[in-house]
Each structure stands twice: as C-alpha cells, then as structure tokens.
Image 1: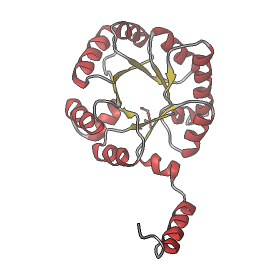
Image 2 (image 1 turned 90 degrees about the horizontal axis):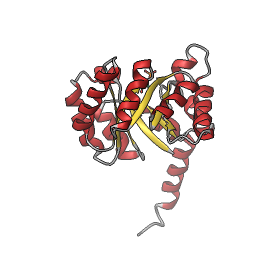
Image 3 (image 1 turned 180 degrees about the vertical axis):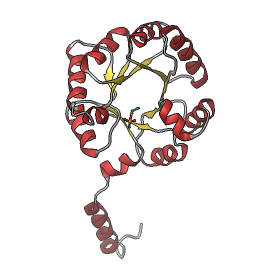
Image 4 (image 1 turned 120 degrees about the vertical axis):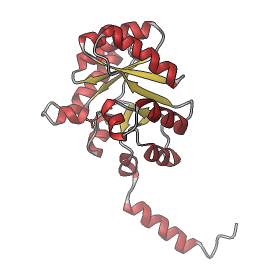
Length: 218
Ligand code: G3P
C-alpha cells in the first residue's frame, strides 16, 4: 500500500511527511496554480522536501503528442530520478504515453474516467493510471467502482501498471477504493489525519499517561 500527497503546498507536504509514511507527491497544473508559484520554483521546493527517493508526479500542459513528449523530457531532466510524467488520456495523450514510455521515462496516465482508458494507458506503457474518483461521484458515475474495475482489469491482464486513485473528497471514498484492492492513492494532506485519528485513541493515551506516570522511571 502506498499513500501519496496530492498537493504542491510545501509546508503541508513537509508536515505530512514528518508524521506519516508517504511514498510521494502528485501535482497537476491546477495544483501548481494554487501554489501561486511558477512550476520550476515549486518543483524544486517539493523535491527538496521529499528527497530523491520518493516519487514526484508532474503533469504536462501541452496538448499535442510531440509537444507532450518534449515537455516530458524537460520535466524529467529538471526533477531527476523517481519522477513520473503525468499525461492525460486523450488521443494525443495515448500517442505521447507510448513515445515517452519508450524513451524510458515513467508515465502516469491521468484524467481517467473509465476502466478502459486505464487499460489502454497500461498497454501504451503507463506505470500508473489515475482515475478521478470524486469527479466521477459528482456525476453519479460510481468513482469507487470505476477505480475497482480499472484495478481488476490491470490485474486480470497482467499489466505492469497500477491504479493510482485520485480526486477524493471523503474518507469513505478512500476507504472503499482501498477495500476494492487498489494499493496506491493520492490524497490531500488533511486526509492523513482524517483517515487515522480517533477520539478513543486520544482518550486511551491520556489514561495511560495519567495512570502510568507514577510508575514509569526509565
Ligand atoms: O491529481 C489530480 C486529482 O486528484 C484531481 O483532484 O480534487 O481536482 O478532483 P480534484
């Protein structure tokens, strides 16, 4: 199981990493825009916070396959190892996924709304496929089910590609996607605490401290 942070908020990333086991960070043009910083500045900051070992997923902005491939090379050169280039699954995107993957740059296929898009991306060479769970739920199209079917398709056909489920607005969506077998999710920083905090845990800890403190002299 791998949890990634879907954000370019450097302080939030730093704080989340200090507490939780984080496998990497995912961004897209909207997330970069929200940071208010230019792409290279924010990627430099994020990379320095997460270190060289964690994954960094960065999306292309170009629309034509050739331009996407050029942008992918520039992203990879700039961000270094463990960088995945995110490419949306348009027709041009599928052409780019093939080119970029063939050039040895790992690809995350993104903006996925159907299981077949995920399978096609995997066949094209993508290493991750990112279905947008909440955006599907927003149009009553069963985001969890789409992510689950994408996961089953990739497994059933022995693809070297994993579902990296994205676009969450509730803990229940995250829980159900993971229960369906998806083992990679990218979530906003605040979800790490929402997934794991419980008042009874806090009560238990407070009781341990008050009852044990007279006897603990290590
Ligand atoms: O990584 C992008 C994806 O998470 C989109 O999320 O919240 O804009 O639907 P959202």
